[in-house]
Image (cartoon, rainbow, N blue to C red):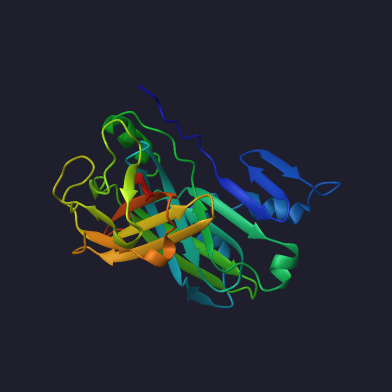
Length: 278
């Protein structure tokens, strides 16, 4: 059985040429960084320290959006975490675990800062493979359930604060009903351009088999990798089939597709397959 190990510390990034990890600094600038930049990155390793450092801010606002979710690929047997935030132009942003430890820190410098700072940020972790549900539980345990807190300092020296609730409630992978490949084949063949239906069974349990889950939506993504084209459709939880528009399809072409089940906390599970049009 694999062992997933979390090494205590923070992931720290700087847009513009710096990466800082625990006890290590790398810079593309000759002579290294100014002491104040190193200090700003290294400081406030806990939520309590970050709040104490605010002192008397010019202003305290709420982040526009913040989320932390789990994505599992049931076909490939891998899983990872996704972080998203959106707010006014910020010069640095940090994320803290429920126990208060900092797990992410990003800064913007140079032209990005002068133009007004960062706004949206999306981070996707590595996606290690798991062999069974016990290994999946070990992987998810690297980020415990609970409230994750976000704090950003804007280019105007205001402070923005937000939070996101992470759960380990993960949907089972959708079971695709059509199109289905013939026995021994990877992709379904002979799919008509004018009648390409993707259908799946409703997801009613977690990946561990518990019925304690609420599915709120499904997403279907169809990709023509050779042409670099993609179609993405979001539907509600009562919908379990879509028809791919004929305008998107070309005869004699292979398409990969994903069906994602999304639960109320935002965690999602993917099932992958493919088809070839006739």
